Length: 207
Image (cartoon, rainbow, N blue to C red):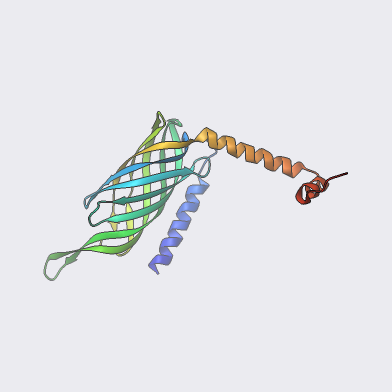
């Protein structure tokens, strides 16, 4: 039941994020990869992050992070980017889901003890909000990523502050150029006479 509710909430959230995206380009990269450093009350984590622009203002980010001790998690996030001063400096917000192996703290009211367990298989829903600056082919971001636990951990809510540094692999203008090229090709194909389409499809040649 909780899993069904999780995927329902996640789906509605991602639809909302997609719906509010505008046409304006809000970041200067299409693909970027780097490191993310996360910190909360439980652990300090180091991870790998990759971000890909899928629409004008929408990105998908994958994060794998660990404290190399008791906590290792993976996250998939979709975010909407909005420019602040220019597309080099923007803010973003979004949602996603997570899973991993985490430690948990269970309060025993009868004995007034806290039972500490680790290696718990967890699943949850993430929210994220942050600021992002692109300078000299490098993206620096500061974010806050709260996690709502759905299974495997006693704490229902666990927040994390993260700092990321990613290298730009593909710039947004290069991706825009490819998108425009594909769009023009589709328009030409749509205007092509039906007879020519048949000839090109079946490689008919006139003698």
